[in-house]
Amino acid sequence: MDAAWQNAIKRGNAHIVRNLIERGMDVNARDRYGQTALMLAAHAGHCEIVETLIAHRADLNVTAKFGLSALMLALIAGHTDIAHLLAKSGADLLLQATGAPGFAGKTAYDLAVELSMLELSTELKPKT
Image (cartoon, rainbow, N blue to C red; front, side):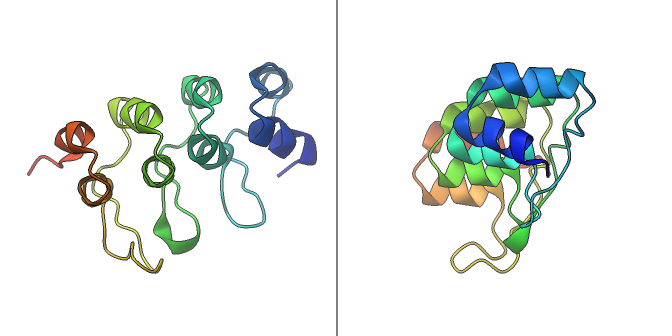
């Protein structure tokens, strides 16, 4: 992942993010930990950047270390507005975390329930 891209995402600079996308930046590029810009922005709570990345077709279901997705990272960080946006945009509700202590085998719904995000847990409950 390009340093300017990563810095813009981490600092929440949506203007630079949009400029870099217009210049051809791969919205699904990964950092050295396997995380995409969407994952970093969701975890940091940068809603405008998350919206921009979704609009530019960022993959909502990429997972990195421990199988955590952008949706799961938003929940873990307490960003319910971003979690709602990702779920509404089509994030896979059936993805399960893999090896993270305390997260293994859990879906976004499981995390929402565990974190007492009751309103959001209803939205995240997978349809069977």
